[in-house]
Length: 173
Image (cartoon, rainbow, N blue to C red; front, side, top):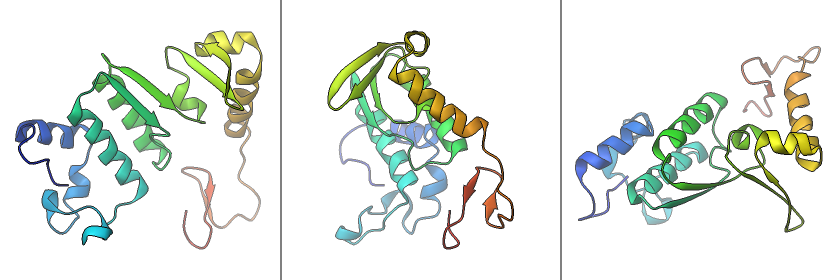
């Protein structure tokens, strides 16, 4: 994770690395912070979740007034996803932040939620407003909520992972 030459300070970079918990990644890669990230350029590749942390770090480094995040935690486990949203709340507090997500847990606490269907804006409001409106947002929210509330361990599920309720496929989760 090479710092941009001549831009920013080492202390800012170290703070961002700490805030986003990238040190655990940096400690495991061949040349630490100097490792080139991209197999196309002779470097290494990261997991999808690690790339999401790098993207968050870049957003913090550039310190723009508007931050746009498209499925920012889609490849993270539930624990890391929770931690990342705590970081988002703290570090993007004074910024306009747009989160594009299909996960209602990611948007439930947003100030304003825009519901799109077939390219059109069909609903807008807070989570509570949209639940009270009793249209598509509520329907979709209830579907996702039901998936968590009613999930039971299937009989004879040897590959069941009790921590996150997923099944292993081909030995991988």
